[in-house]
Amino acid sequence: MIVAYSIDTLRNPDTRTQAFAAMVRDTTPKLYTQIRRIVQYHDDADDVLQNTYMKAWQALDSFRGDCQISTWLYRIAMNEALSLLQRQHTTDSLDTEDDANMRSLESDPYFDGDETELMLQQAIATLPEKQRIVFNLKYFDEMKYEDMSTMLETSVGALKASYHLAVKKIEEYFNAHD
Image (cartoon, rainbow, N blue to C red; front, top):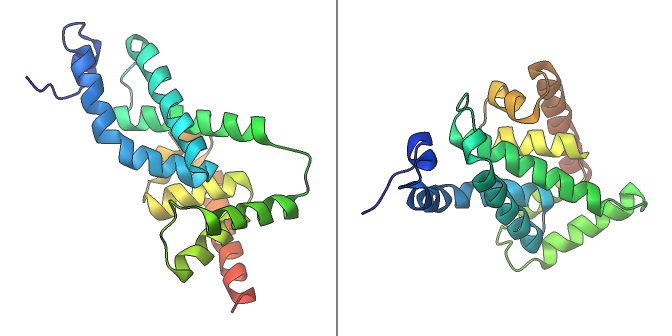
């Protein structure tokens, strides 16, 4: 018997395991992609994804249901990804970090974009962390600012400003590399 996932089936001891497996199956592609845009490395994204589902499993009974399950998972994933970035943060200069990010994109076997996509990803890699996250959520996932505000626990105005600055920096990057 295949069980669909909902907050009720996830909390029910009789259907929890099957519902959680269905949730993982349905949410993994999109969640992985979002995590990957933040952490950039495939292995790191896999680790963050696994940690996200482990934390979600442990917190099923405390999930209040005041947002969609996908929003809750994104919030957990975002926190995990940001924690990983903080742990990895070194005292290297920003320029050195940006160069390393760009080289990693070019050599990544999981990156299959064309030249323009590579240039966009390189431009995104130069953005400050918050702007990069907001840009990815808005541009690629078409997430509403209100949903981002809930997930990232910041104001809609701050998110709009971050997105605007990110777009401007990406445009400048493209203009400088024409």
